Amino acid sequence: MKNIIRFPLRVVSNQQPLLALFLVAMVSTNGTADDGRVLFDPMDVFELEWATDPRVSPDGGNIVYVRQSNDIMKDRQRSNLWQVSIDGKNHRPLSSGLKNSTSPRWSPDNKKLAFISNDTGSQQIHMRWMDSGETAVISHLQHSPSNLSWSPDGKWLAFTMNVQTSSKPIAKPRTKPEGATWAENPITVTTTQYQYDGRGIVEPAYRHVFIIPADGGSARQLTEGDFNHHGSLAWSPESEHVFFSAYRSDNWELVSDEADIYSVSIATKKLEQITNEPGAERSPVISPNGRMIAFSRQERRPLAYTPNRIAILDLQTKNTRLLTEDLDGDADSLRWAEDNQSLYFIYDERGIRKVGQVALNGKLKEVVSGLGGTSIGRPYLSGGFHIAGDAIAFTYGQSDRPANIAVFKAGTTQVLTALNEDLLEHRKLGEVNEIIYKSSFDGQEIQGWYITPPDFDPSKKYPLILEIHGGPHLAYGPHFSAELQIMAAAGYVVFYDNHRGSLSYGEDFALLLQYKYSSPEDFADHMSGIDALIDRGLVDNKNLFIAGGSAGGIATAYAVGLTNRFNAAVAAKPVINWISKTLTADSMVGQIY
Image 1 (cartoon, helix red, strand yellow):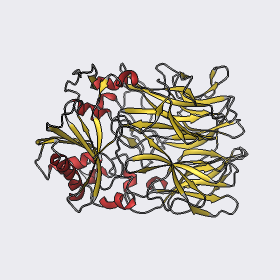
Image 2 (cartoon, helix red, strand yellow):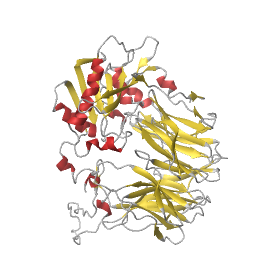
Image 3 (spheres, rainbow, N blue to C red):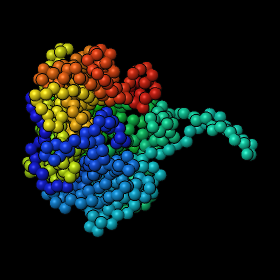
């Protein structure tokens, strides 16, 4: 058994509707420990803060990040921008209050910061001059912008935004008599995805690429047509073209695993298709010298999981090659090194998120480990990074803390913030421990974790809650989880595992559940973990409970149909009827082949 609490880093300074955390919220957990700390309580969720989207300034001196918090009066998350110097000093807010500010992006000359905020009542692009602190709204958009990207010359900002279109009626509306009260006209549906959970039937709209002058002015639409142009944007070094991903085919609405890289001229709006291979090419990034484009490539095949690979294309020869064939898993969030000879990226390995580096010859190496802490409810793998010069800023996760900002520089990692010490230093949390065991189905090795209640007494046996992750092609890890800590504070041992089908263990492991979820195989993975904890004397085998959401809800419903060992179950948002899910669920297009 290996205890996992935190990575050995140095702290250099201290600094969905939330009420859905319901499973044991009705249980009082506000007892007091002997050392004066109290147990973690459901209402403590409103006091949590965590860091996301760190951005290193071009000169490498400062990091701006999004500081997330919870509004107890509105039951909503709040997002504000904070800045911290690379040495952990000068930690201060750039925005505050009840409005939300996100997507901070430094200008290439280090002098300005663009971001998106609803400070004026709607989501608009704002600009902050870093020397004076003055801020101005530079856009007047009808819909919310996203994917901000500076041109290298600092004159333009590219972004994506929805453009609504009008549904054409199937017949000419009749003119009603003056003063008459008629029913609403019928809605004409011409798109495949015309309704969304929580929104109902939506007006048809397509996402397009725009640019706006960095000094403010009118936004100009660069792309046309009834297609979605989405994801991250990249600029050519001469600031004349914007690169993006789209699938501009007649049947694009029915296909979720096809996309190509395009460029568009900001002067003429001329489109050029850069890639044209089966599968999906997304997230383009241009090398600093402008000679190569790197992107994420996903093969098209009728399988529930296909890994994202890193590919590069020589813009002169048009030759393409894969760089991460030796990486058994996904590679995401690509960023070029300044010398054009390698790329940094995110990958997951055995429940831990890391930053890796791949050279142009395909040689791989680990750079940073311990990303996480941005999935507050449950311990999903999460987190991101940004690099400028020799500094890598990332969201650092621990099993007993949500995400802080850390920086890796000159071979050393330092944690720059301590966002929750004012709360969690006065709370007694459950301890997260790793467990490795064999599945009774076929001897497959399974990795899991269990949280012991605060003031755990190894001579006692505790009730157990099995909590199953969604996906099923996702993964948990040894990360902070408000939901599971609430359960532990109520006196439960909380067990969760990365059963077969989970990510971060390779492609073969992820596909062990192809065409058979849920099944006796993943059921055995869960039951074997419970049996292992019972054998260790930790758990009362007459006091077992089970819960899971989405795919975890499916597994929960399946499990209680096979065994009566659980006293109660929570099958949250499961799919119970696969037939009715088709053509009704928001995700249905990706499940039709």
